[in-house]
Structure formats: structure tokens, C-alpha cells
Length: 228
Image (cartoon, rainbow, N blue to C red; front, side):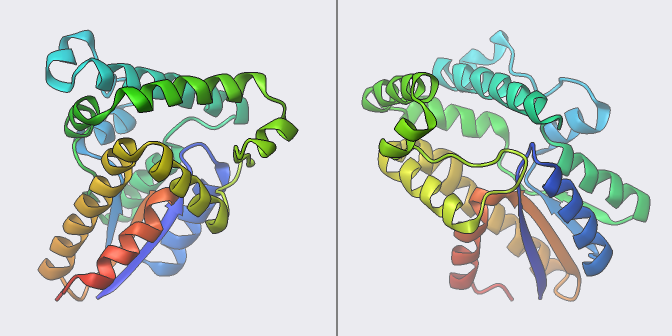
């Protein structure tokens, strides 16, 4: 088994450079991406086919719909502020794979399942905490944010491992259902897909590109799995 997992930020130019370097140096046979088929199609066609429509509320629930809309808006605004389109690193990986005729695997859980689970699990306590955190993020200065335990970092770069671990731990404590839905469930799903790829072609080199917040959890799960 030859598997390399690299963590990315969806709006950091640093991630684009790191993926190019990893593909050049590692020379993978398979590039596995934190995407499902729907989001991959949207990126490849430069269309908004991954947008969640009102018609899908019955499938994913109101809370999942609102979360998706807020998330899309936030990523677009943050991406614009740093001059990088959200998902640029994944698009780069797909383009490199197509150019070099490398196999691509989309290993993330379908977005509809994730959003449906989000709707089912989000508690009222977490909703009120979310509103409070938004207020603190908007109206507190950087010094006040640090006093309140709010982590700040440079959006143009992938956060350090210590910062990522702190952010994930805060999410787990303050929003346990969100952590399970967005992080833990998807870690397990993506590891399962990677294990399938490894068992099918144990001699092939796999480069997995996932959000930086997934790397540690996925590696911990992999250590407990009988891969071969």
C-alpha cells in the first residue's frame, strides 16, 4: 500500500501549489478527492450544478438547506477576499489528472446525505450557540476574539496542524452534532472508499486530497483498519 494524504484549504493558493508539487513528486496512479460526483461535475463544467435548490428541501431538510446556502455564500465571500475561487485546489487536481491520464476517485459522501443528516441532528442549543458565535465574530476585535477563545488565522494559507486541531476540538465541544455530521461521518466514509481502492489495486500509489480538518481523523481511522 502506498497512500499519501495531503490537507488543503479550499480558498488558499498555497493548496494549489502543494497539489501541483505532490503530483509531480509522488507521481500517483490514482488521485482521490474530497468531492462527490455532483460537486465534481460542477467544478469541471464551471457551472453551479452543485447549488442546492428550494425543490430539494424535502430531501435535505430546512436546516440542511440553510446551512448549504450560508456555506456557499461564506466561501464565495472569503474566496473573493483572497482572490482564489473556492475549490480551486480540487479543480487543479482534476485538471492534472486529466492531463496525465491519471485515474480520479471521488471519495466524499454525497452532499445530500450530509445535509439531510445535518437537518436531523442539529439541536436548538447548537442553533443559539451559532448565533452567538456569529455575533462575536462580527462585533469583536481581534484582541477580544482571542480573549473569548476565537481562533484567527491567515486565510491565504493552510492553517498549521496545531491550529486545525484546536478548531476541530472547539467544533466537537460546542457543536457535537455538526462535528459528527461534517467531520467524523465523512472521515469514516472517505477512509472506507480509500480502503476499497487499496484492496482493489494494492500496488498502486494513491494521492488523497482532502480538507485539512480531515487529515488527522482519517489517519487515526486508517491505523485501526486492516487495509490489505
